[in-house]
Image (cartoon, rainbow, N blue to C red; front, side, top):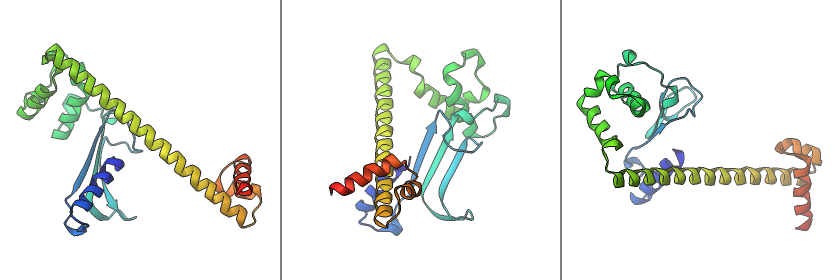
Length: 196
């Protein structure tokens, strides 16, 4: 979410020639099958806030819906968001005779019809499956790329911390403790320093 939101932010900033007060708002919306946030509620809206919870900036809003955390039964559902999340989570497993009454609401009927792949001809269904698989692979590849970049960044920070510690005269054990690395890692950095 952050990657795509900040990419969009940078694009907008450049397009409006760094006119920050007049930037349009950005909403990064993630509908997730699994849980990623350490809280119980299934729906989160986040902005930049101070340590006391006051909004500092609402130009960029992150909206997260975690389907795994949504456990309401049909009788408990009240809001449109709850209706939509229930639909997203259960539509593929519900038999036509078990449809909840709110699925007859016009806006949900339109959404269900739009997503109902059972009505697609075989070629269209196959194309839909290919696009879905390609999107999943692209997301997986991007996630791996981000993880590898983060790992390289962490390694670089640790290496620089060890170099600085050694140049300040700390022992290998002290440098290892400071950078939270092994003494073998420190030995590798020392060998690089002696080569240079």
